[in-house]
Length: 213
Image 1: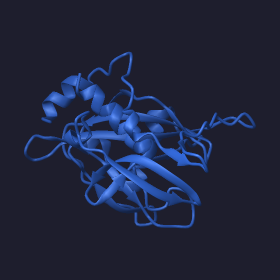
Image 2: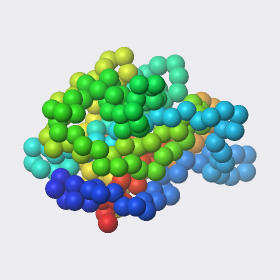
Image 3: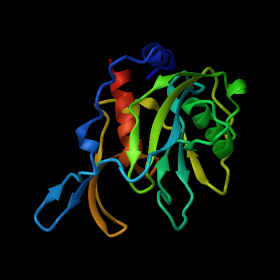
Image 4: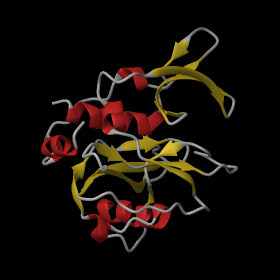
């Protein structure tokens, strides 16, 4: 997809967002069958705010790409997973966009001014059960390809796939994997040898449906 076409379809984002592909839904194997888990938001305490940055930029050929990160391997949730730059809100953040931009600066050294970054809106927020975060995806456009450097404490590598691999007709792999003793089946986007799944894949699918308008 050409960057100029992506910008035309993202500015502005539609008031009513399309749904993500159901092929990307994570399901769990029980004794009887595969089922979609029913995980309502926590009522024991307020869900914690967080934000991720969905940054679209042009490559040298004028095609649209976006920024993903491979998180470092550690003993905890989301170890080694591919996601967007982002994290929890801090008291000094003015809003969700400020959270996403600050986290991107910390994790991949994004300089918004140098890359000509502007925020164009948000996609559908999602809830992460294991950490009780309510995450808002912030969509932003960079006029120029950003110069990015991974923070080795949090980021193993930076991925910059083309947007076309997330359009509705893009291939989706079905993966079965046991994660923290949970037998799971999910749809995933193949990106540079990685399987991009879960909430990140659903955000990418919704973005792809917006771009396919």
